[in-house]
Every structure is written in C-alpha cells, then in structure tokens.
Amino acid sequence: NAGVTQTPKFRILKIGQSMTLQCTQDMNHNYMYWYRQDPGMGLKLIYYSVGAGITDKGEVPNGYNVSRSTTEDFPLRLELAAPSQTSVYFCASSYWAGELGKEQFFGPGTRLTVL
Amino acid sequence: SQKIEQNSEALNIQEGKTATLTCNYTNYSPAYLQWYRQDPGRGPVFLLLIRENEKEKRKERLKVTFDTTLKQSLFHITASQPADSATYLCALDSGNSGYSTLTFGKGTMLLVSP
Image 1 (spheres, rainbow over the protein chains, first blue to last red):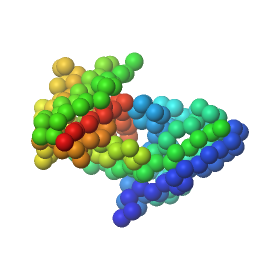
Image 2: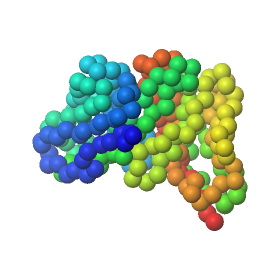
Image 3: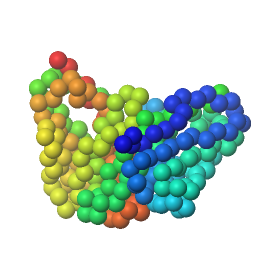
Image 4: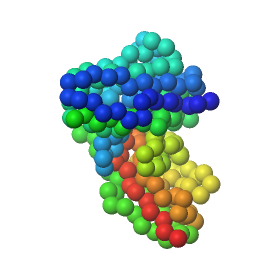
C-alpha cells in the first residue's frame, strides 16, 4: 500500500492564481482530512470528509474548497491565492475502529508559497 | 475557548535518559487523546492513543498517562536515543464516533544528544 499520497510536493503561486492540491489514499478509509501547518504552529483543520459525497468545514475553511467524489480522492482547491495561504498542507485519512478510536494516517505534505 | 498547551521550548536530554513531554488542555472533554511524532519535512506519524477511562498506556519504550481531573497527559520515552529526536504532537478527540475530529497542540521538539 502506498498509504496517503499528495501532489505536488512544492508549488509557488502568484497572488490571485488558483490551484488544486491532490490527495489519494489506497487504504479504503472513509474519513479524510486537510490540515495546514504554519511554522511553530499546530495543525489546523481546513475541511474533512466522512465519506464520498460528504464534506464539512473545519477550523479554517475560508479561501478553500473541497470535493469527495470517490473514497480514494479528496482534492483541496485554492481559489484566488493570498500570501496568508503560504503554508504546508497535509492530507490525512482514518477509519473508525469503534472503542479503539481512530488514528490518522498522514501524507508527506505539500509546501505552498504564495508571492 | 478550547486550548491545548504543549511546552514550546525544546526539551534537551542525554541519550539513555527518560524524556517526559506534557500536554495540558482547558475547556475540553476529550474522549481520546493521541500522540504523534513529526520529523522535519514530513507528515505526522501516529504513536499512541489513550481513552478517557484509561490511566496509562504502554508501547515498547513509550508510555502515556491521561489524567482527566488535571486535564493533562504525559508522554514518556524511556532509554531515549538520538533517533527519538523529533517534534511530538498531542491531539484531542472529543467525539466517540467516526464524525469527530482531532485538535492538535503545537508540539514539543525533543533533542536527544549522544
């Protein structure tokens, strides 16, 4: 299993440009998440999904959009990029294991710079 | 508002000693608490999960305690090694279903010197 994969690894955007960060998992997990991590800060949840066709906002959703048309893919769309969106973006997935809770499996991250 | 606090200063210890990291929280009633390890330039990796009705959990050289009265979790690495050097994140899950989400602390950097 490849686990959670993210593309691209790095990207530089100009202010006002748009892009899609790709995330794919091959573990058949129902739950998927997008986080951003700024230097010295913890992970902030942007959006999450509990299954195909179902998405919900996290703590910092403004400026982002998501879709979940399949179990495997959970792309994150940035419209009209702003310097405040310069960050490292992590995608994660998990499954519900009942009493055992749900650990999250993270991808390698996408480092985005908006200039 | 909900708050999770981890020591922002790096913890420096010598190889072979026990490292103890702290996670405190306020205005929160987590059903689960998780610890992750993050190496520079990489995504977090899950280490341990402890439930609210558990006091302690062990896995090899790792031990986690969870005190819901003190609103605190302690994460111990015994016989620490330089390879244990990383940032350690605690995360709280308030829900008891698949629909809950994790709230992460900022992490504490651990540096183990030979």
